[in-house]
Image (cartoon, rainbow, N blue to C red):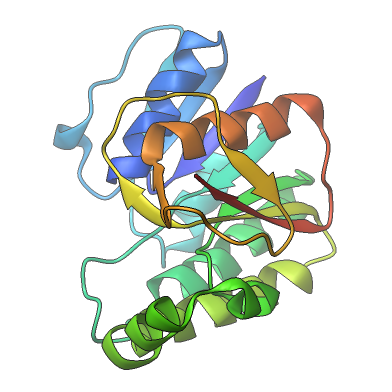
Length: 207
């Protein structure tokens, strides 16, 4: 498949790029700085641009079979709206370019999955990361209203542990460890892309 990956140089985004290439997909990576990732002839195309620049976003989306969004921000205490605004621009580009399959990484605790959080994690989200949650909530609202064939993936606490391909997946499930490796998140997102399942569904992934 031809897949565009936004947030491709983030920790999860890099896993998505590498795993997608391993599976034989043709990847177009959207990055802010092209020096952070090397283009590979025949398997990886790199487009450098700003997520707020509609022209470059459309250039990345055009001709794709699917789009994966792993946008994120290092600022946990300020809502810079990078996820929500970036997602709006991706949705506009997908509609213009007639690309329908959209898989988006959010976070456990967003939307309906808030009820599945432990009291400790609710306090962490509410007190330490309210801006992050606000951005995710706005992002999910835009995705759900898009009319596209979307799937939202909500990981629990992300780690750099190796891929296991063994994890819990479901709607509003409770976490055992409240952790999941980025490689396993990438594994699930690509599985869903390939199988074309769980359309219009928000899934939690955790251990």
